Image 1 (cartoon, rainbow over the protein chains, first blue to last red):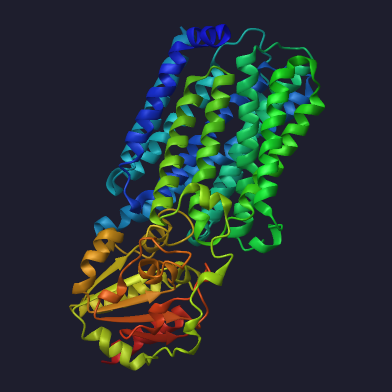
Image 2 (cartoon, rainbow over the protein chains, first blue to last red):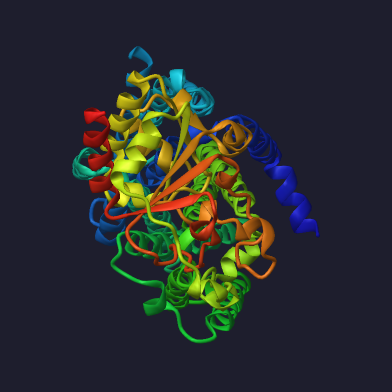
Length: 104
Length: 466
């Protein structure tokens, strides 16, 4: 119990952030109409590539001869980057099609 | 000073994520929203590159090289993919995000067990959670990809008593996680690898029995898992933007999962148990001796030509036949002759949420012509003719009136309320879920057999001669 209380005290701001982001996320996303569900999903998917930041931190902190960490980190960066770039690019491609019709 | 700039960049990045996703709620601003979110990501990545770290060796060349490889790979893939293959694409990208989280967690665990770093219980818990959710999202997404791509069939990966196996695997995974959590640094890396393997197997196994019409649910669920693993990884590094980004994705995935479940009137639990359509025994067998009426191209063309209003009900069959463009041509032709053409889009039409809208948008169909389930149903009685192209389960009356049907209670398009129904279909085979459809024998229904694309092409040239 003490451990839990201590954890709560130490991470209070983070817990606030967590709860408010959850509420904000549900509010923002529940307004998206059916038409845009696929772009929303692939856009959100690209955002989940934010894990790449962890991989970058990992590599920056590793010493230059720690090959295990470096190679794992590099894999992480590659995977994350595919997710980020591919995700945003493919979403843009889809949304471009939605926009085109406005003119006609 | 530089720390301040980095903090502000993270803050702006997080705001860009939220605002970008918000702009995605209307087609007019959606593209800007996506670019804004991408900008936020770029900002966050640059900030992470320049943030000062104590005794960091940086290894910038490795980071930039990896980013180039991944970026080029992702960019090329995104330009090549066909819109029909979008669900597969999203699944793969999603799986890679999960894999990235696994790699991070495993690296932290390597350092933990060789004594380089010490974690308290809270941190260990977060790392194990990241590993667990990331691994499940990874193999689950990869299997979902293989299924959507048609590389694997449900029956090939489903064992007898699969539900029991899944429960055992789930308990084993949770048990193993608890063991690692309680054991702390005294345990070795082999145990962590064991947990990773177990979670990877569970991810595969939990998606294995789910298929067919449930695919949109699974994809949404896996998407939310990847988001949660990213958020958990954000807690490892005490990094706010990872936390915010991950939670947003988790929320998006969860909402879509719930919406998809509602669209099928199924609980998430029953989707996860799987077997939708696996046991087609419940379907009425009386339909065997019923005869469906057939309509000729000529008659269908004349009926379309003299209708006031037409509703097209597209299903995944339309995408498979690549008939979007020719459907749009038929639409244009009829509109020129004063026929009002609308499209009725069921929420689970296609293989992921909103998939059908994207396919029609690709064919230049203006989105105001796309009606959702409720609007389409209220317009149905004033519709002269419904054309069903490659849809089946979403127009099945059994969902309303046959309590024995596996899809009973699922909201469907009440196409039989229109004056006439024409079904474009290859043969009398049941739909993806393997359920017989009484609509085909309905008094208002006529069948037009053949490949959807060829049939619509014939309709177009026939109407041109009228």
